[in-house]
Amino acid sequence: MYINPDSPRQKMINLMYIVLMALLALNVSSDVLNGFSLVDESLSRTTANSTVQNNALFQELAGANRQNPEKVGPWYEKAAHVKAMADSLYRYVDELKLRIVQEADGDDGDVAHIENREDLEAASYVMLAPTRGEGKELYNRINRFRETMLSYVGDPVQQQIIRENLSTTVPNSFQAAGKNWQEYIFENTPVAAAVTLLTKLQSDVRYAEGEVLHLLTQNTDVQDVRVNQLQAYVIPTSQNVVRGGTYSARIILAAVDSTQRPAIYIGGQRQPDNKEGWYETVCNRTGEFSLNGYLELTQGNGDTLRRPFEQKYTVVEPSATVSATLMNVLYAGYDNPISISVPGIPASQVQATLANGNGTLRRQGNGYIARPANIGKDAVIRVTAQVNGRTQSMGDYTYRVRQLPDPSPFIEYPDKGTPKRYRGGTGLPKAVLMNTPGIVAAIDDGLLNINFRVLGFETVFFDNMGNAVPEVSAGASFSARQKEMFRRLSRGKRFYISRVRAVGPDGVERTLPTTLEVIVN
Image (cartoon, rainbow, N blue to C red; front, side, top):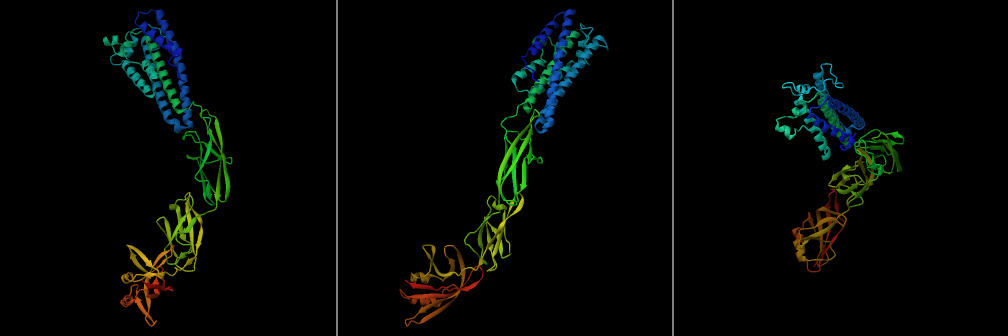
């Protein structure tokens, strides 16, 4: 319980302490000593009340620690340390009071009924004896307790009150006389006054203990009213779930600290406890669904807070996007680029295979390379993905397998550093023709660009009588005989390149049906 330093009780204690110290400087009478007993009784009652209040505050902290040790634990441990120090010092002072009274009244001495209240030797003997005096030990204990309490208090006003109440500073006039704190307090002090001073010390100990316990309690929010704008939320990893996949959602209570875990109820059933509030269920049917339930949270005052929640989600059929990068069919014996993706799934978690064994499918860069083996047998691409830690089928996709189409023959020559292909039908400068080593063959239709290796071809010239003069080349290069025929050609003359034999990347050798007409310009 917090004690206001400016309360009438505290002011009364301070005033009595001032009066007590003033009286100690006088040669007091028996009536005045009776007054000390009255002050001691009042201080004892006040201290007892403070003890009860402090114990209640500590028990409240202990209860909160049992409910939420993760949050309250560190503060409870500090409070336990504070209480242990205060109780230890309090009991030690109680022992000193009893020893002083027994020194004055004998072994049967009773602190509550002091007979030799005016005895000036008892307190000095117990507290100041050269080898067995307890004054130095009390001085050290007060200093340790004071500094520990100050380490927990940040408010300057509270610090000043605790520092003054538990001060062991000797006034300058007594310092000049060479007295230390224990001599200043207990030398030639009547038993009644010494006991009252020690009771006042116990009261100050309980006051400091209460201040720190109150501060530690505030730090745990034990007595705070919880916010009244709490709402329950469901945070799914995705609102679209593939059939057969897993719906995952995080169910949280907004505006509550992460150390207080609410109980989750779905369909009236309490879900297993987990720190992050995850809920998962396998989705075997497509359509729209709703996750309904409520959260329950026990507040600091013991009341139960309940908040309902609802979250809609959609379950869809498995789907994937599969497209041939360059063509609508797959060509046998050729590396066909394939792009495969699944909406909402990272590429690294998507896998694809040729399900029916017709060739190979391998990952390359951000895509795949399909190389079917058999013409006329479909290639079935099977797509799977890792969804929530399990392999999920995304469907099979069938492609027809065809042979690569026949290429076309070209005469390739450089034009200002850029390769240019002569396709026939127009004039070709004779100088270009003479400097060209041979012909090439390729599929070059704007969609595919696939080079073939030329194995041989035939050129057909016509003499002045109109007779056909064929010349055969072994390989892709013009033969010497063919070059000689080129030199004899005049402007406007033409010849034909035919019977071109070529082999493509699929390893299939073919004779091209296309004839290339060359017109000499």
